[in-house]
Image (cartoon, rainbow, N blue to C red):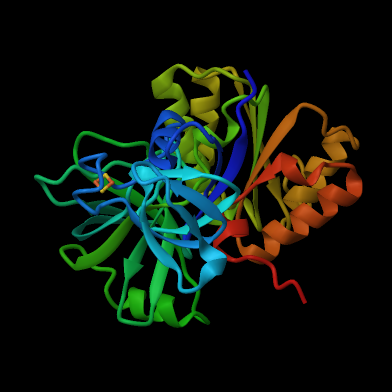
Length: 341
Ligand code: FES
């Protein structure tokens, strides 16, 4: 039997899914693993209320046709809405499959280690009695004041002791770093929001082999992902390139070497750019990747962690070298989209 399908896009999340015309928007979204606020599935609780921004739909009980082009954007209930065309719906708190809701909590600085001359490893203690979940590869935001937010990858897979680890590199030119530096003391309370970011295992579920490219403290994101993969018994081939200016800046070189020794599916390749006597690969990390792959990106899913400038340079140079744009994943594409002009 032929069933008409339509595309639904939720705003502001911009999440999209294809739905059957024979199901309500809520039924279809839930069946596909999306989270849409709901309680009654009957038009009573109002939790699934949305605004119809574009398209046409049918009301479950009255058979009334709702048409966004008819005038003011109609409030509708996703649990009572059958699509008659592609729809744009405005509704808050819709989450993609596997996506976790972010929350704001107060965390305490538990410990600080000077890992390199300009890198501190900070352990934050999250509050007790709150279920705070995240996936390896996600990041948190430190809410410094009403205007300044500092974002850092969470450098560990979830632990039982409520701590999360951040690798913080000095950035004296950044206003948010200047504000944060004054508060980097054991015992200090910080307001944090977590989790954020979509660079999680759900993005590369079907990938055969993974290539992680980290610049400086971008390593922290991959440390968490690798810990999570190990905890899940995921032994897909992974190659991690970690680039820094000097060997001293590879502040967890020995630790990741030991991890790779214990997990043979991981190949770790350090690259140093400003230390001529470094005995292994030298230069910019992404250029080293291109050289090593020799233009053959086939089969790789690439994940890149670093500053927006580093990530976009890597992306452009990889595409010029033969990578398909969709092969690369990075949170930078989401939180620092490139100016189309
Ligand atoms: S789920 Fe209650 S109104 Fe839709």
